[in-house]
Image (cartoon, rainbow, N blue to C red; front, side, top):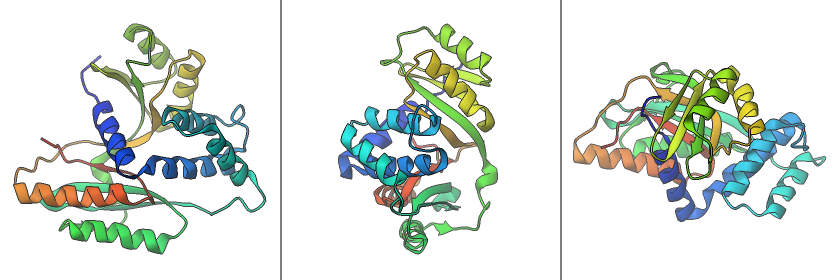
Length: 243
């Protein structure tokens, strides 16, 4: 196992979002809608929905809110129709940024994402303009405080299920796999009652960029803060190595 944690950044970003405006409930609500439409309303037969429900409960979303979201998505009208859209561009200093959105109004989302780049002195690019700088990987995060087993046990379960690597940090374990192996690894961990903080396909930068100029850093943070504040933005990825 090697030392390399994403958990601290994930947790810090989540806490920042939660403290600012409770955006996580909006994100999870939309994820529930997508999961129900793709695999039905029964979490016992829809692993994606089962995972989203676990994520909702981990973020203290009330059970009645979860149930209403499932029923609404399973109804005749199904509520709003959401599209998953990706935007790519550059922040100042040549920092690559990928933005994943889930929206019911692509014109609004496109305008907001473009504005976030512009206000931070960056520029929105064309599809695949920066994606080549990232690897598409399945990433599963396990919080040490919630996991009672050993790292060796976890490694055995994950590798036998098809994971590529498991990385150990003070506060977490990070399991990496190919995207097509995510379900198999996630199901093996679930069968072993391993609690997962995150289990999804992410974009991991192959190389990182350092930015030291104070004004450039402020501009980068401006762009990322605006993306954080946009309810249509599910997540974003950068190759910025923050100091």
